[in-house]
Amino acid sequence: MSDRKLTMSEALREAMSIALDERPEVFILGEDIGIYGGAFGVTGDLYHRYGKERIRDTPISELGIVGTAVGAALSGMRPIVEIQFSDFTAQAMDQIVNQAAKIHFMVGGGLHVPLVLRTASGSGTGAAAQHSQSLEGWFANVPGLKVVIPSSPYEAKGLLLSAIDDPNPVIFLEHKLLYKVAGTEDVPEGAYRIPLGVSRVVREGKDLTVVATGIMVTRVLAAAAELDKEGINITLIDPRTISPLDMEPVYASLAKTGRLMVVQEAPEHGGFINEVIARVVTGPSLGHLIAPVTRLAGMNVPIPYAPQLEKAAVPQVEDIIKQAREVVVNWR
Image 1 (tube, helix red, strand yellow):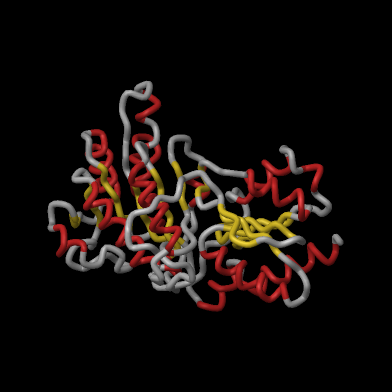
Image 2 (tube, rainbow, N blue to C red; image 1 turned 90 degrees about the vertical axis):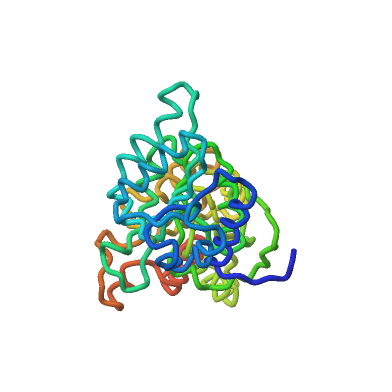
């Protein structure tokens, strides 16, 4: 390791720079990613370093952007698409769901679509209902798409390089509150890959297993530090890739803790966390449970604009502490 602390924006930019250097077929396209450097500054100076042929500003047309990327991928290129807000993928869902995700299967494996779609996800910036959604459940429900949610700069760099290597489409959901936060882990200068479809045990504890992704990993860690003072110890598992989903670390942890709590920012109804619960209660861990499974998620409402309402609509550190304490204390 190289004793470097990067923000997620910096780590993502470094990963894309490595991919651009390694593979001449890699290029990036999206709105304002060139001279402007991206809506959240992720592409930064890549336009000045690699030129307009490889860092391609596009018109405001998500359907056209993703359609162009699908065609380029089928022609031997490896496009990285940046969609400014995950909400805007709604404009491109035909190309994502009916084209990119399906083509490899519909031609019997004869074609591949090596496309990465990066997009900013989640609430917390006062951007209101049309710019603040967490849509991972949409994408995880589509066979043919891999869905990645990084939770730190180290994870983001290694996962993005693996996503770019993948021969078929990957949706890469980056929480916008994490872009400017420096990680606690060192980020090596060179290339490294984190395999897709492998969950990470972030911390070990004896009392409660918590599964969380993205910004919720940060919040669960903060809650776990407070609960440690009360003698309540949490195991935190970050799936990193929610499709495909690696449940083995969850099963192993439940054999020790017997209690499960799942946390997500997206609304509870139809959320990804329900898949984790379903696999637990229909799998090898059912007999290990000593308490009802508990879930903590966003409210089933569009994200409000008002800061106090926006905060109330999604789980915060204090909510995680309260619910984790209840499940451990009430089911000792």
